[in-house]
Length: 318
Image (tube, rainbow, N blue to C red):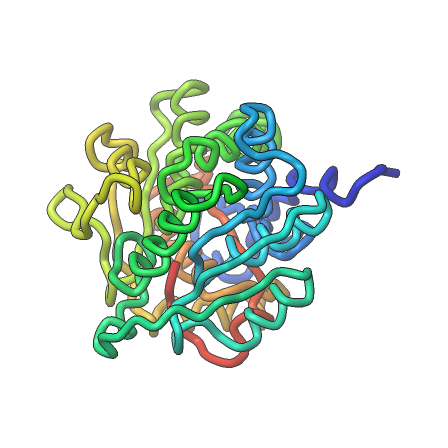
């Protein structure tokens, strides 16, 4: 028994894939992050960012939490904010965020404000890191924080607590659950917090473990070893730079919508794993990696969220 639902964040299952891996000698294991209370791995970072801000004295009772997000971070901040008693205001690009996700956030008591992007063409930029469709709502968050001392902006893209959450929980859980025996870790790049945090933990445990980053082919954030999108001080931050400058990823693989969606369907139909499309992308790459490995070797990947958030549309975004 636990005194708070927040105590159930983390310690998610690690499951061996047995059907989609048929014919492979190496093992592929998937960490089911949709077992977190609000349904995604972002619960980890929402809790860590908020509690670190509380400890630092920059987030206090009665203050308002703001963030710009079209994805799972919005839901997780709404969830954790509700439990802790904070008002949460989420700024989302008009016409980009799904009505289903907006309703989920509002169900947790969050206020959702649509921001006019003005340029319709940028609404097709589905990658989240640094894309114009995300930068404009972040500018709103920055302005709100500067104007009102009772506003705290979570800054998921540059907040060091994002990666720390995964370094100290997700990464350590993987090491414990595998007995420290894995050869390759595969994870998609969104804010890059999961990949950076887990990569740090694995490197400290065993520097020989390879890390493979996954991103959508239709909205790549890294090209030729460098960030393809702008790193703007105060708006988009250094987590992506850790992937490139510190070379935390040994390889970066781009996955098409078609391949990600096909694997998502296979995971549900063959493994009983009802996960989102980024999960399909991760497993697609994990299987490619496993084909090059031998018996007794092990690949671990992440299933970030549930497919029930994507029934309205299927597209590989992070």
